[in-house]
Length: 115
Length: 114
Image (cartoon, rainbow over all chains, first blue to last red; front, top):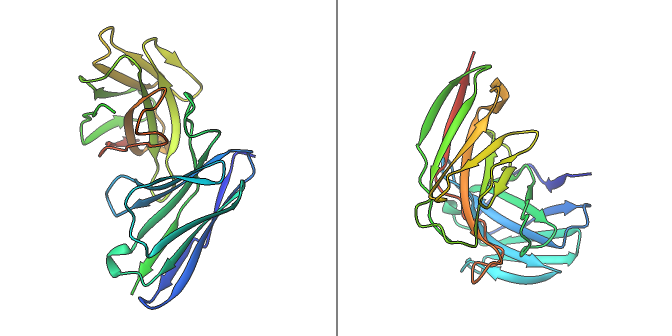
């Protein structure tokens, strides 16, 4: 199984809402990532978890709160978002964030719209 | 990690080879070249990576020049399903302060036409 799943596929939320994005993989990967992708732009790294510990936070605003409950799951909690946070949120995993092969498997993404 | 330069777009005829160039003139000795692609509305997909030798897998071939300042991704027989944005990424191994990062540039939009 080489699949990374993300739920929901689409999410519309108001600026006062609290919601969560979920990512799951069953490949035994120990590194998981959140990326943000605006329309017609490349993906931008937000967070890296390695062995369930937060390794990289790319100066992401605190209204985005990641969580890694176990090695297969990665959540992104959203609170008080702004319309400019509307984007495709991609989850990825790899065997190890520092490995040479560095093959990252990406999920299909969650299309988020903030109204 | 070194920066990369790619043409913004390329057209390719179905069934022909697609040769995608990437310039990485400031590449360091411990930096690998990676290629990913992103088909519309999907997550990026790993294609291939290499250090200095040419590499081939079931998806593509990677040709790296002897001075390592540029590389070419070759899709041997392009199909309509190969229409995507192709990203060339340079990343150090072992990683230094960019531990865990995969830095995407603007990429090349490849359109395969019948």
